[in-house]
Structures are given as C-alpha cells and as structure tokens.
Amino acid sequence: MDRAAFFRELWLHYAALTPQAPVIRALFGGETVINDHVAFRTFAATPLALDKLEPRLLALGYRRHAPYAFPDKHLAAWGYVCDEDPDAPLVFLSELDVTALSPASQAILAPLLAAIPPQAATHAQVFCEGPMWPGLASQDYEALAQESEYAAWLAVHGMTANHFTIAVHRLDPLLTLSEVCEQVQAAGFALNTSGGMIKGTPVELLEQASTLADRQKHSFADGVCLSVPTCYYEFARRYPAADGRLYQGFVAASASRIFESTDRRPT
Ligand code: OOG
Ligand code: NI
Image 1 (cartoon, rainbow, N blue to C red):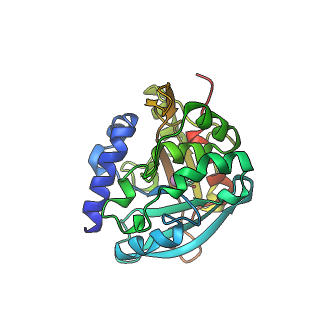
Image 2 (cartoon, rainbow, N blue to C red):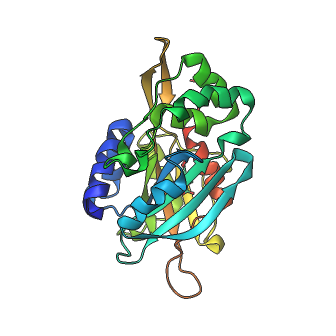
Image 3 (cartoon, rainbow, N blue to C red):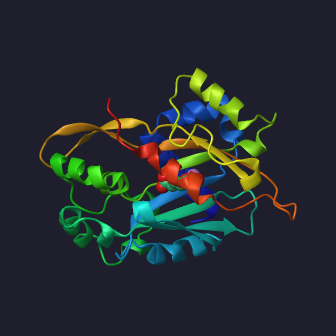
C-alpha cells in the first residue's frame, strides 16, 4: 500500500472512533488541512513491539528520527520522519514496558499478550486492526486503568491511530495556537488542560494542544457496558530550527501531558 492510501484508510478508522475529528477539521479547511503527525501505542516485548512494527514504517518511506522516554508512565517512543515527502505526516510510536507494572496488572494483561499472533506485525492492516486479543472484564479494565491509563486504553482499542494532528503552522490564513484552541472550544469541544492548555513554547520549537478523547460505549467480556475514551485530535505549531528547517521532533515533557488526552475522567 502506498503512503497516501495508508493515511486515507487510517483516517477512516480514526474518524469512526472519533466523530469530533471531521467536525473539527472542517473548521480549519476540511481536506485541505495538513496532518502533522499520527501516533500509535503498543505493548513492548510482544509480536507487536516497536521493533517488530518499525519495518512497516520503513517500508512506507520513514526513518527513525529521535527517541523519547517517559519513565513515570513506563513508556518509550520513537519519532519517525519521511525524507521523500516533507508533507507526509510524522509518526510517533510508543510502547509500554508491561514488566514495570504491578503483578496484578501483569496478570490481567498476560492472556491478552499471549493471544497476539506471532506474525501480527506483518498483517496487512496491522495499524488499524484493533485488538488482536480477547476482551477484558470491566473490573479488570478499571483496575488496569488505575495503574496505567495507557494499558487500559490499548487493551480496549489495540492498534489504531490514537490521534491525527492539525499542522497549525500550515494553516492559511495562519492562526496562533491559542486562536485555534478558542475556535475548537467555541465549537463545543473540551481541551486537555493537563500541564496547561498549550504545551511547549516557540523556544522548544513546538507548541501543542489537544482535545479530550471522544467516548464510546464499549461492551466488556462480562457483559457490562461502559463509556470509554476513544481517540482525540491534536493541534501542533512547529517553528524553524537554527538551520531554517521546521523542527521535526517531539518534546517529551509536552508529550507526557498529551498522552493524558485519553485518560478516563469522572463523567
Ligand atoms: C501520544 C502522545 C504524544 C505528541 O505529539 O507529543 C504525542 C499518544 O497519545 O499516544 O502525540
Ligand atoms: Ni501528538
């Protein structure tokens, strides 16, 4: 599959989980909006680990750019860039070190991880395939989320883009990130305020904001139906680095707060 087809298909899966996304994108030009990046989550040391998925990104024309670490969330990530096409979205791929979780959380996850097919990373649709494991009971979901919102989200949704991102620096006419945030809020969408509404500064070459994830009813293995966070939309404004080219990296301190866009919150 070529890169354009890959992102078209990914958007369809993402928009089905994220009804806010096409509505918000339409505020800023609809299909003319440039997608700055997408992000995926996975379980480390499994057939879907980052090192197993990476060849799929390389095959789409990407290369590893920079690593990021989130020790408090037991996450590691890489950013990927596409040299052939400066307009291609960047990719942020993170993985959870399950062995760093409590024995109770590891026990909840063990049957899921054991069910991942050995060749899962080679599946044609791996990046929008969803969970390749049996469903959780609702109380296990809630127990897991207490310790790791990331683990609980990933257990429910599996491999799928958890956000797309409006490239604010590419909007015409140009808007500031706070103008973008105001328009999104005026349209009725709540933003993630963890660490402040706008994360990062021009000095860090990247300013970011994001919505709170949409929610959908999910029916758990014990028959209980709960509203769970699905996916969110992000807004990123990049600035030129010293060499005059736009910064292509991420900012770990900001990313750490952006992850929280899919946290469960009291409803
Ligand atoms: C990724 C969070 C980090 C960014 O742009 O810094 C991120 C995630 O939620 O999986 O997207
Ligand atoms: Ni992002």
